Length: 321
Image (tube, rainbow, N blue to C red; front, top):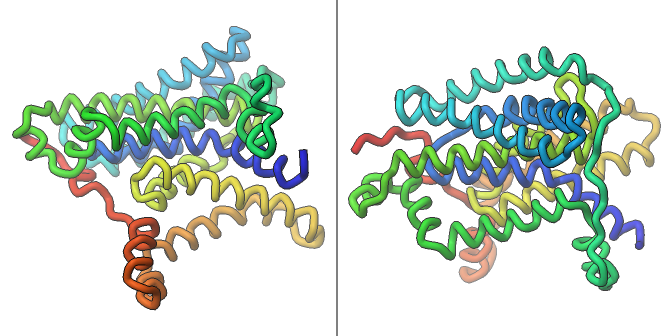
């Protein structure tokens, strides 16, 4: 396998935690609920996933426990915002602060302890296909699951009746309610599923990308996942593209570290974050509009649909039937 294909395959694999977290938050926000606890949820679920897998010797139990932690945190967000009608942003932010400290406290016995890891699972025959084989079929179960989730999420959003109801709940909950949709139940359901996916993202980080557990282990991936949801315009495919773009920037930083040995090594792991923020700003700026205005109208419309995004109209609002 060439170095280029190996790098691309590594980007797809290492981006799996952000794909899980980004798609989980997309599900939350499409239903109208902002879950700002993503960073704290990923930290606690990364610690829980590793601790359970380490003590039981079962990766499946580790991932299941992490998903349960994500769903439990999401239940708190849902109860506070949907039932008690408290501010969603404040609840999520406080949870992130609390869960980060809780993960550090509870994770002390597992700091820098060697533990289980997800093993590669090449798919016979398919792994030998040219180009696609090394990229898509020479991965591990976590990466395959991320591929499947992308397709299922897109299909659910745009090709199913429940997906149409989901988008209606996030855009016009009054109209959805008038058509017989239980808005609060839908919001609870999708918030819990989204939280479970964010929890899987945490476990994917500690059992698949950066093995083990340490203080602030997920390194800000939760905040990046939140930014990528905006970058991706609350669309599963574009959110995934943002996750892979961030993975590519991390790979670029690693390459630069080898090419520019004079710079402090602490600089390179930070590079993807300002670059991602800069990309986020450019994709939603007036400068982008001015550049697009120079193109033929048909190209303008096509690119505008890809590069510009609007949040769900009822995002962060309370609903009272």
